[in-house]
Amino acid sequence: MSVAFEAPVSAKPFNPQMAALRIIGSAMVAFGVFLSGFVIREPAPYEVMLAVQIAIWFLLGLKISRSVAPLLVLMLLFNIGGMFSLTVMNDMTGAPLYMAVSTFLALTSVFYAAIIEDGHHRLLLIFRAWVAGAVITALLGILGYFHAFPGAEIFTRYDRAMGAFQDPNVFGPYLVAPAIYLMYRLLTTRLSRAVFYVPGILILALGIFLSFSRAAWGLFAFAAIALIVVMLLKERTAAFRMKIFTLSLTAVVILMMAIAGAMQSKKVSDLFMNRAKLVQEYDGARLGRFERHKIGFLMAMERPLGMGPMVLGKMFGEDEHNIWLKTLTTYGWLGFVCYLILLWSTLFIGFRSLLRERPWQPFLMVAWIVLAGHALIGNVIDLDHWRHVYMLFGIIWGCFALENNWQKRTRQSSLANAGIA
Image (tube, rainbow, N blue to C red; front, top):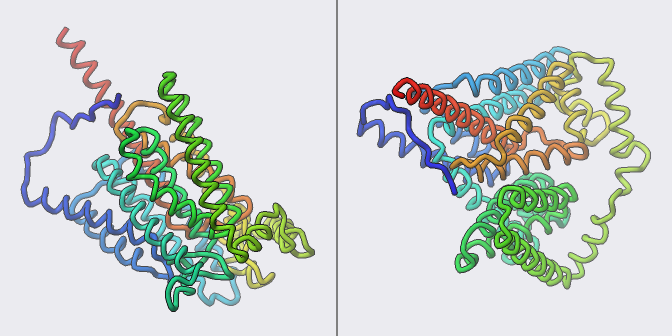
């Protein structure tokens, strides 16, 4: 049973104009999240929408609390490390724009945390908008993959679905959080309402499959299993466990049937058999991904300020494909340490509240599981500039701020009751 979220006792007088502005602002937040599924070029419409929102919200009085301040400090220090790396670059082509995007995306995570703390109901808007954007961009990727209409191939790359993204390796992981959220809704709602969630899950799962991103496949499998484990820990009744077992088994069968149907295409089958190999030729070959990781780490150890954005990629013809190496080369030692602290502190504060009955607990659970999965795949892929990762950081820190406020009100209420008694 969920616990009601009580407003502070000293609430401000109702202001109709401000209330209307806040409703419009919440709608803008939802629209901004929706646009996160359409990033064909940088800067994308998402950046424009978020820039306008951030300016308006803070002009209207949105505050950064003590709970959210550490996120702001870590994000700023992380990007200051990146700015230091610019000072050692010989050719700065594209580097200032890269750091501008990095800094802006860092601010978006703080913005999400602040607006969630300001009103936990926005979490529902955020996830619904994320689902809508993900389903549409997944459909574009699926239709593009099968050349369903003239020009549909613009939504693919290297015979892999990428939707309205620049890269299949970003497209696939982007779909995971909304898919896991729909799975949660499916597992916790009445069976009669399953029809509202199953189509969305199938579309997103097929989009993830057709991205042929091994990181996305692994992330989806990890997140789905982790969701079931966490829910079994949270809900221990025999009836609920039987429901989870039945629905999970049914979902696996349906997904396998959908994938088997897709595999009837020779193109799909051939690409799947090639991508399903754990180590590709470009991973283990001479100067392949893993050898570049080793060389890159050795080079980074000699450069405290880093090498600058995209420098290692220009040297070897391939980007880092490792978030730890990326932070070292692009943001220097300062950025690496800040990112390490940021990631582990975010996972820690989220884990502490993971099973507590709160109105925002489902959203925290999904965000925490998916971010933990991203921390794992970050060893073989570069997460930098992934807009949804910054969104996940903001969601978890926003829920952390909500929990701190909840605890503060609980203590105040207990002291007040003790005084009356």
